[in-house]
Image 1: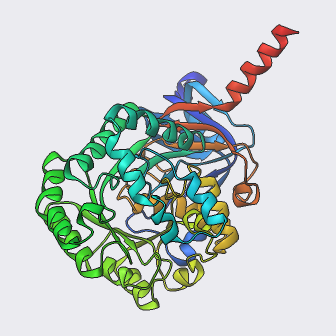
Image 2 (image 1 turned 180 degrees about the vertical axis):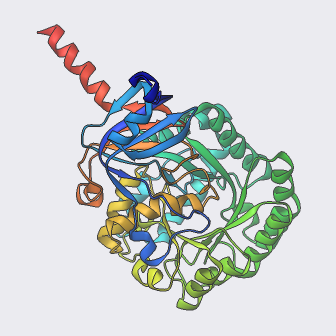
Length: 440
């Protein structure tokens, strides 16, 4: 037998990523979100490599092993950098028109929430702007936000409606989300949100609840534009009974429940999230221990939004350490909206570490695999494992602990979405150097 016949032919793939100082895989059992000490296990492979074919991950291991078995026309040598799964952002309001920067200034100067409302601010200002905006305008403005999210390493985003508050305008926002899913590399997970009581129903909020249940939800379900039904359950929005009825109506129409819970008071939103089998209960700033225990028992993900708490400047953050001790699965999200204008999951990880006392490993788990569970995508996303989508990011740092430690800059060097390189800052830097050389 000749040497040639004894040597195995290397399998051809589309892309090889090699020489990662840390390949953070988060590999493991994907049936349930990670809880407790499970959140500390990042599944790190030193000198790691990933093989990608047809947009899927086909091999993971140490670089010498993978390069013996696989070859590719495009080999990406990440030269001692850190490789992670793409971030998943499981709570955003990415589609809207208008802005609220003047209200931010007013809050800094000490204006109360009611004073801001009396001056024409608040969510209703964005509702007015969004109602006036065309589909094309909303697509354009949302694309700019998604571009920023992609550049910072986010590859999947949950996108809510909620700034229309009429059947026509809610459907318009969901149509925008559908168009963005066709146009943008980021995958969007659509959610219908009962967000607020519009001014035209301020004297009869029950009439609006009935409109949501009898008209909005059936039409949203009929058109197939949404996967989830969410409701803002809090003071000044929908009460506990109204929220339950909306979520049950959504479930009956095939929309899986999510919930904005207990953002400003312990209204019982966490308990409601558990009782209706919600995929996630989000915010949970004031949720009771009983509510947290109920969510833990039912496996409801608590999606924490530290930027929202930071932006409101009330210095109250969710008690993440207590939640972990109770066995609650945690996810992290930006809560991107006109009152919390942030597209960067790296910053969210930093805020969670600094103000919620999560370890870096826990925060990464919350922004990847657990965030994927919060949008029912853990079988496809959130970790670097065989058969999953090749949604992969390269950070220009030697190890994962730089997340949270180094903040205020974008650590992302490359972003791969579905096996395609969509962000490559190293290539851009090389091009810039070449241009400089030509000008000299």
